[in-house]
Structures are given as C-alpha cells and as structure tokens.
Length: 151
Image (cartoon, rainbow, N blue to C red; front, side, top):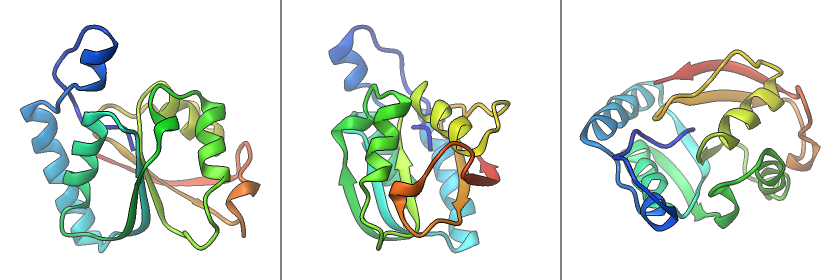
C-alpha cells in the first residue's frame, strides 16, 4: 500500500514529518470501510517510520483484525532491493502482510512481483497480491498474482 495523500513538504525533515491531508484522510477512511466489508485481516502490518505512513496504517487498520504491527526503518526512501530484503526476512508464520510505504519503491515492488508494469499506485491505493510460496525468502520476479487494486 502507498501512504495516503499528504500536504506538501520541502527538505528531508519536512518530508519525513509530512501529515496526511484532509482529502487523504477521507479517502483512507473510505478504503477502511471497504476492507471492513471484505472482512480483511492482517497477521502483520509493517510501515515506514515517516509520519504519513504511521497515520495511514492507523486509519487503514481501524476496526480490522491486525495481529502485529511493526515500524521498519528500511521502508522509508527505499529501493526495490531494500523492500525485497525486508519481505524476504519476514518470519514465515506471517501469512497475510500489509506493507505501507512510499513511491517509487512501492510501485517498483508491485511491478517486480506481478510483472505488471502498467499499474501505478496513487496515494492511498492498495494492491492485493497473492503468492503460492511456502517461504517469504522465495519471492522472486513475477511470483505474485495481482488480485485487485483498491482505493
């Protein structure tokens, strides 16, 4: 998932501490309602330490069953390789994982895992991808199946 729409920011510190815009908050609340109707639940929710991803994770997981949450430093300003490293090191008992991150890394990860280079997640959008693999470390190019994109 890509974090929700934010207010503009200039410079590293201002970028890291950007808050969600009112429009971004409202879109995430609507997406949360969709996820509630679908009965969505997550074994693990991992997010970058940036304020906007923390806010997104809080809004998106409201009233959903989330067993564990974790802040992962390597998701902020991360490359495809770093995001894959984060996923490859997940314990295998986590089956349903939600990652809240940033572009361009999140879009690169989605394209890599699904071989679908025509999808671009706008702020607040989420892709549902499944894998038929017994271990997270086995993820590779094209190993995922894109089920749907939600917004």
